[in-house]
Length: 421
Image (cartoon, rainbow, N blue to C red):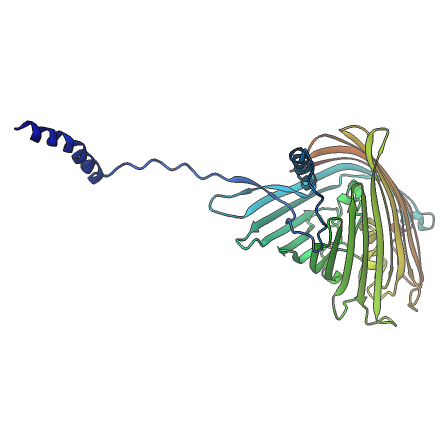
């Protein structure tokens, strides 16, 4: 073989080897298993309808921008819910809940009840809630979400009571389903007495949008007769109730203004109405953070929209849907965080309903309440505390049978623990 032929043969050997390797099947590397990714469900970032002009950038913009991003993250943390995106899915799924238990003591003082008055007693109230929420951003940028929450609050009369607190579908700025009324403001969730009662909900179709960086507008059509939680009995209107709410947030100040208009066929005017003004201001006392809250609400033929869940639990045992009502409710509440682990809350409230225009039952219902607690939160998701309340109920409704346990003074105290997950 000539030297030229040998060189050509050696040069072609690698090509022949590559052809042989290409002809033979090459083993494929093993794919890494798909894992769930963490995500966060939070309100959609929708620009205000009337955005304000941006301030001109100055020196040190990068540092201020980073600080602003950190502040935004902290602000989102109050409403953000951590979740997981499952493999093969683009939907964020979040599961959460709470378990609350305690030892409670109740003492009654009802002068006119005689032997019918309940005796002082101890009880072991427990409750649990379970919530599933989903969120997905479509390719168009539209956010679609769902939420379902149920609550178990057994009692000696109803040991298997399960209540649906929320069942909603959200598409962009629209919400449909069963949820808390857009009318409500202060709910008293800082107190175990209130937290064990499901919040009053309604069937609704709601739209919500920021008008500016500080003003938010919500409009909704609501039906209190579709509520699954404790609410005051009311007649079914021919059309849903109309709710309009304005919220203003500026640093430590939060202002809540809302009005309700409802159809009441049996009323002389044909309409019921309700209004509410609520304000919360965050303050520091002695270097410790705290807050002050005040709220006043009034209603004519709209009793379902005023008062707390505790007030509604009493009123619904006395009032009937046919009652023509007018009344108001007022609350003053304060919170003080003494350390990172210890905080206290106190509130004073009055709830008053008059039944002036019904021949078979005229009169008044009034509930005055004061409550306070001391809460220990050593770690996130766990808290324990001591809580007490005094409620004075005056019932004066003619020709109406009233349970003996509802009139007079009720003193309650409890030790409680709560675990959130």
